[in-house]
Image 1 (tube, rainbow, N blue to C red):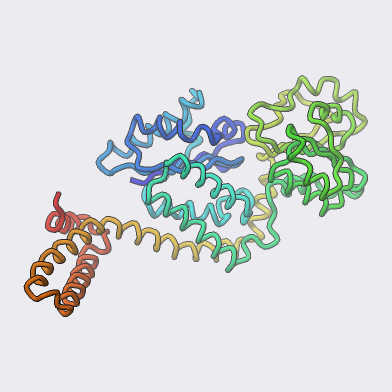
Image 2: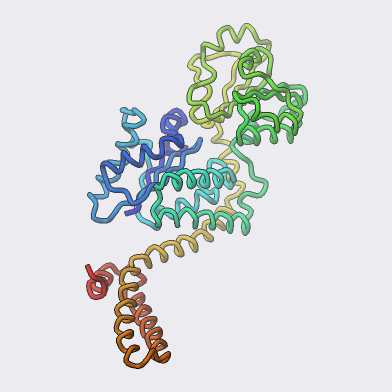
Length: 407
């Protein structure tokens, strides 16, 4: 059985998504915990700012499908110490067609908050490597991931789904608005990862001139400082900028918030004009509960208008991409079905070869007999594939396996 649980931006707000962000060191823990409840053949986990998804495979003779889903969801809830009920924020999918289609859409940018964005491809590759290193992937799941990346490459090459595309970071910067005096405004970027790099690139394209950067590890900022001529701020001193800069963009992997109400005491009296705080992190870097006249917060959940605008602009390319995805879904599922026939095919060829080997000894290794063996076994295999509908006809498959395998 192939199953998927998805907690994503469409059904779960950022305050819920951040609770279920799964760090690399947690992958093996989750795999082991689920495996204690139901026997897993494989598990793939992807966790980003907009989604946490668990793709899993179990043997068909396991407990009922509902019990399997319950075990996965309960394990996730307990590990993250969430006792308020997770099901309202979870989307379940079952079956190879539905799940492979979802992953192929995801890798192609069709499930992203920003349609067509490319960052998801790198995130899938990173998640794949983590799960591969932890020996969590089954052949079926591994093949599905590889096929999704193949589909993504073809779709991005043969459509304009990501042409002139924007990232979540650039959407957030657009949300700030068209600022005429951008070259005079000062901006502090907190973090030096991929999202921060995209933010800085976007800021330069919009002629923002006075850009500061800070990061816990200063060495990671060197390339950005030199390339964009940025002003470096020591991480221990960045909060002093709250009184002076116009915009602060947060994009770090910190597990704890970097900015809270405690840091904003008397901010309204200290500032002459409003400061814009942009939080692109999951878990969130900014947790504030009070209202401030001089503070405007932009987070991932405030990008809905930009998301809708982006989707409407690309709807024709979305439809084109969806059509192309169908081919890859069919190919993957045909491969999946054919795997069910492999035990029978291997056994058939072995039995025929044993039979022909006896004859070969009598005929002194006659090449004609070898050719007969090859033709006969190939013809029989094709007939079995046809009768079993490439493995889809489970009743026929059971009879074939009973005849030709040792079980």
